Length: 612
Image (cartoon, rainbow, N blue to C red; front, side, top):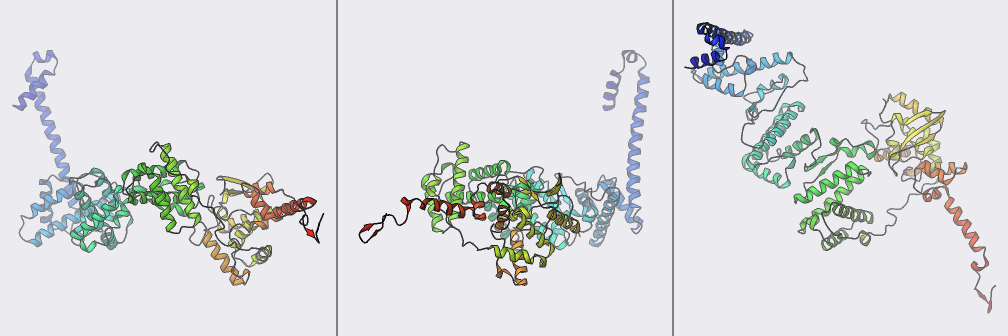
């Protein structure tokens, strides 16, 4: 019947002259076409059969009878090449060999198939680049011994690793969740080399988390809350008590992997990893870029979203340093956590709960500086809420809460004699510390600016040597002149240390950027060994700048020029370092008291007479 329909359709497609003509000619043509199709189908089958047969012949140690039976079973389940063999086909194969008598025989046939599949993976790997994983997500069962990367697939044993071999992505659940688990799975397989650690610390915990997330209906691992983490521990206690302590850390690995490896930052994630954001160097300390910002501590989703949007704004358009942004984030999060415990949210905050918060801070004995930073953080949040029209009226006045701030700690007395002692002993210092100290003493730049100097920041132009310095106080950079001798010293150091273009000039033992703590430890240790300065840290604060400032001032450089050179905003600190402030005070005092009206003796009475 079908043939007749096909013939009639084919005949109808012919021109009318042909339709009216000899129909037998068309029947002959149709028969030939069917013969050609059958021949093609037969050829394809023979080619597929010959390919599978050819692959099986690559295993001379397997008995011919066994190979023939394996080939017939694979052919029956639709496998034309070992490369097509997946977990579902393996299950079909397993059902077929279960008809064989004897468990040992069945096991032997299954082991032979797995060995053949592993060999085919190796052959495929030899045909492509080692770095090409060619692994794509699909909603089906994923069997690790059949993993398409040979060096990974060969590390799994179907018996010992039975619990972690099968990953079922065909189960009913959120596609986002399944894709995320697959992504983390690939990351673990690619990065963790130790097989025991991979199994116990990563794969088993990830499988626990996957099963829990499917059961609980979790859609996105980047938004696993603290309450979800608690539920996960309860799940482990009931289903995998032996992994109660080892499985929970897998949540942090998932969060970090999914955030860092995502093409664009996921600002809705409950934890942000700053290393993914590629923040500009002008934002300061590189070590802070390994930090993370957690929004998990907030229970209310609205508060979490407000803090996320505010922090995103700081990171993207603010001119604040990274350390300032992190401090603001922590202080605002602390405020939001407090008002949530009091039963409020950010949109409903009022003067009453704000007052309670600051009283709470008073009870915790915060330092004046810390207290004021928290007040300013709440003020900044208030401004953001007002600008975003999330609240209609302000709920606090910062000037009402801010405290007057005195000296934080006793000032270390660094005299010019101390500075001269250091200069006289620099020849005994290691080269890198000697050069760093020389730069600080003879340029007066900030220590943080020194640590961030790169090779391209020292250059010669228009018959003069220049140094490009990060301007900590005003952001950006400033260019200052340096002596030709200092330029040569730095250049020779860069050549000896083989620094490449763009690298930091000074690095610690780990090859990272110097920190103030490391530098202080080195300086104090060297001074103690030399028996000088009695344990003083000569570069504490900015008093060391008086060495540069007073030299420049004695050479006739104006206070305003020195201020620009060092990057200060006003003349006050410069006058203090040069002694100009004391000179002005002495001059004004002399002028004031030279007037008889202001004499200290005027108005005194001696023996009943008024002294004039």
